[in-house]
Image 1 (cartoon, rainbow, N blue to C red):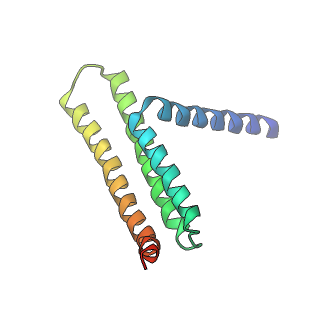
Image 2: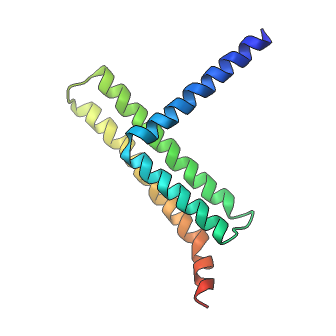
Length: 124
């Protein structure tokens, strides 16, 4: 039984990784998030961020990626269930897109708060 649980966990992990790969492959905004994630991480290493700065960035990045994944999942499901345009589905998709926007704006604020002191130190 123990071995079967491991197999199911590995299958679940494989499915999740396939979903992440599909997200990046098919969603232009996910590729923007990927670029932003890479730039933020590179800047974090460049400025040698402290132990109290990295968690803020990590949480912001995770929230944006999670919102993007949920938005994509909702859109895929809605399109599969009701391929024709429907006002209620349109409103649901708009709300999901708003969640991504809210997360991205919050992440941008976190980025400014974390990096602004480091950038200001360059100009001193």
